[in-house]
Figure: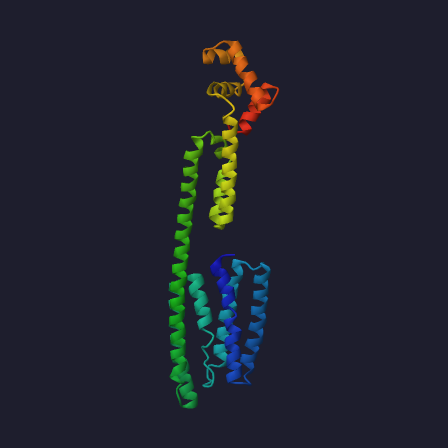
Length: 295
């Protein structure tokens, strides 16, 4: 699941935690207790799904809708109460909106929060002839600023992650081209064509584990050593003969291409089979390919 969606699901635990603090501060409020219980069960279900790995990115957006509903119910239930900050749950969905939908909708949420805060102050003043303590509004403003800082940090991390992926892809391709130039010149083009080298580079870049790199290095060294060992057995003319043998043409045609007699070609073939410890032309070609002497 996407990292931002995973983060959104974890943010949901702030709803029951905030409600619990309100229950402790002002016991006896049925609406707050109800929201505490329901949101706690909701968050527990969400966390369980995440731990099991069954949570999806779509769950995060559905969770935002439910958290908005909790904040609205909490606001309506305590709109005229001067004992509870009725907008206490708003910062949580505000942060979630910022992460999921971006700055434009987040600023709209902040504007709505400010308007509702003003209306609530007026309503409490008309009902109880006193204004809500300004600390609550300051607290909400601090939460809004903290949300903005959080959003900036998250956006920066996303940018860094994107740049890291680009650099990783460039390093991966550069490594492959480096090995391609080095190995192709040493008769290893067939090994490159199989994709085995690319798979090893992908694994190194993906894991970043030095042991993976060492294992890949040992594999390459083993392949090169095997080829060098086999190549040292044959002369340049025998390798050239092997290359023509691999095409399936006759000894007479090979002799014509090499400007030698057919008997010389047969002698080269016999020498190759003796050194490779094989008995047929086909086995000699298979041995040469296995040792990367020919493509």
